[in-house]
Every structure is written in structure tokens, then in C-alpha cells.
Image (cartoon, rainbow, N blue to C red):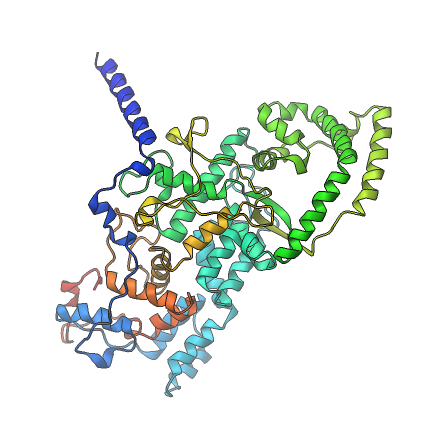
Length: 552
């Protein structure tokens, strides 16, 4: 009897949860407390406070920290010895210890601007991009292999790594850095770096021998969606994959509307490069060439795909008809989702030349050779792009991406209503959360452009806060918000919200310059403090009792 009651209760709960999912969407009502949550409010830079110890204020950072210390009867610690500060600074910026020559030179330099010059010297080092680029590569789960059991190489993935290093060394403005990674192919098609940057969109772990291709596609999109949420917004959006977030005002519809921006993404290893006008002209000529040569190419494709299907029939058996249709459809006729299916499946159907040759009859071979010769002649007339780049790139191949649906319980087999591209409801301050998408002339949807511009908009309440918090964490070991990837309600509130907002607004005002934030932090008295514990004879020695976690 008890067992029956448990099963019955479980069934009731399942129906209730599904009902909440279906009825939620944009009609969900957040509590007043959720709507007022600090991270979702616009960045409102406070005035720099006045403090008693003005002689200890080198940057406004010092004033914010001193104000709170003075209220507790405390002050900043004494400055670190020059060799201590030098070691700290070089490890922070370059990940390397100072050389004996650098120590001797810096200790002997008593001129004004000695600290500033050393910071600039470190920021100009190529090792800076390697050290800070590594932090970014960890965030975006960069790898040169695909993961899982087979763990195959991604031979061109290293170009994304090198791009990130170059971007940090060049102090690429953070808003541009975001735009290049999310939609570089749409916004800056003439820039090789911007095209390489879109490798971010296909850095997902990839089970290369997956038999369930539809599941592999969905898991890749889920991974990308969750990563965008944590890296750029500092939110655990991935927790809303199966249901509304249990703690934060993030709806399940938010998860899939964010995913819709990436629905048409396909990994490719070669992309055209050129201006918008030049690429539009190239694509127009290419479409004309494809129409003129369709008869020859389609007949040859039919012969070759039939032979390939026969040679690989045992390997094809594990795939459903929808995937086999994608494999057998000529490349230029494939829809976006068929290209995705083909990407995950075709690499599993490899056959040897001998196996393939055995499928041809004599008459088929004769016709095949005639068609191949004719195709080779036509290829000489094929339009060429202004330039071409070999790189691991995440782009789109059609202006109409496949539909994204809300998934009951997160299962791809149970699609519910369609989810158009949109932004998390809690972040749009009551405005429509649907993205205004303008399709570019380059054969892509334009969806990622809308997302990139929203993420990099100065009015976005999270983007600048999240990044300056990461920079602060890189210098002090802990961010102003303790969990740099989760600004949600389950994370400790910021230990100094006014300072966080001032830094975020200053970041934007200084052109989204990461190097400027390094300078601002490292030239402060807060950063220059000694890390030695004070003795009982020193002033303010009771600071350990008042502020043991050093949060003031």
C-alpha cells in the first residue's frame, strides 16, 4: 500500500511540474524580491566617498575600501616592500617570477612613475596575453581534442587559442571581444581574427562516435547555452534546461530562447573572407554557378552516395531515417539541421577505396568517370571568394535556422511550443525580451548579431560587472562576488557592491579596456598593501578579530 502511494504521489508531482512548464513562459510572475535582486538592476555608479586618510588614496578604489575600514576603526595595512610588490605584480600579470635583474633595477628606481612604468612593461610583454588568455580559455572550455572516449584531435582549434592571446595582448575592447566570438562572421567578415573567434561557438565537448545524433546535437547546444550564461552573464542558466530555475528568476523558456540564437551553428574548417559587399557578390555568383551545374553534380552525387551507402551499409544501420536523409542529400541542398546531422554522422561512415570501388558496375564506372571529368571542367569556372581562411569556425550556412522548442524535462524527444530567440526576462526591465533580428546579406540568420550587441551593450546589467569581477579575482584571489560564474541568489552578495558598480561603470567609460582595469587596480594602495600579519604592537592589530575573512 505504501509503495502504491509513493508511485501515485510521484505521478501527481510530475503532472504538476509539467503544468508549470507549460504555463510558465513569459507569463511567469517573479516576486518583488526577485525583481529587485541587485545583479539585475542597472549599473549605477556611486560617488567616490570622502575619507579621513586622504594621503592613502591613490585611486578611487582606495576611497571605497577606506570608507568601510574607517567605520570599523581600521585602516589600510602598510605598503609592501618593493620586491614583494614586484613579485606580486609579475605573477599576477605574466604568471612568472621576477628575475634578479628586474628586482635590482626596480628597488634602485626611486623616480616618480616607477610603479607605472613597470606595470606598462609587463602589460606590453607577449607573456601577458598567454597568462590572461589562459584564464579565458579555461572559461570557454577550450580544448584541442573533442573529448569523450575517442577524443579525436581538432587540428585547427589552436587558432582560437592564438586569437585569444593576440586579443589580450592588443587590449581588444571587451565589447568587441564579445562580438567577435559570438558573431564575428556576421559583424566583421573581412577580419580573419573575427572569423577565428567564432570557434567559441563550437568548443563544445563532442562525442564523435555517438549513435543518437539528435541527442548529440541537443547536448552540444545545451553546453553552449549554459556556457554563454556563465561566462558572459555570470548566471547558472544551465539549471533551467529541464524546468524553471529553482532559486533564480530564470525561466526554462529563457534557456531555450537563448539557445535559439545558436540553432543554426555548424562547425566548418574553411570560410570565405572579405567585405560584406564582396562576399555578397561572391555568393550571388556562386548561386548562379550552382544552378548551372546542378544536373552534372546531382547525377554524380546520386551515383557516389548510392555506392557509399552500399559500402557502409552496416555502419549506417545505427542511424534513423532522418539522419540518413541528411547524409544522402547533396551538400548545397541540405537544411541547417541536415548539415548538423551530417557533421555528427558522416565521420562515422568511413569506407576504404577498395570497399567503395567494389560497389561499382562497369557501366557505372564509365558514367562516373565521365561525370567526374565534366565536373572538373566546371570547377575551373567556379567563382572564388575574395579570400579563404582555414580555421575551426562556428558559423551558419542558411538564413533560416531550424526551430528551437521548449523541451519537456529537457528531453529532445518531447518538444513543446517553439522558442524564438530572446533574452532572459528578468534582465530586460519589463520590455519585450524577443530579439530584433535583421538578417545580413551573407546567408546567415543575423540572430547572433542581435545577441552579441545585447551582451556588449553598456546597459546590460551583468556584462561589465561580471568581467571586472573576474579581473579583481585575478589580482586578489577572490572576486568582489565570491563565485565569479554565478551572480545568482545562492551566491554570497558582493562584499562591496558600490565598488563593484564603480569599477563596472569605469570599465565601460574607459573603452572596455582590460589593461586599464589592471592599471587602476595595481596602482591602488589596496593592492600595494603588505600581506604580513600585524603584530600586537602595531596599530589596528585587532583587524583579524573585526574582519577575519578580509571582506572589508
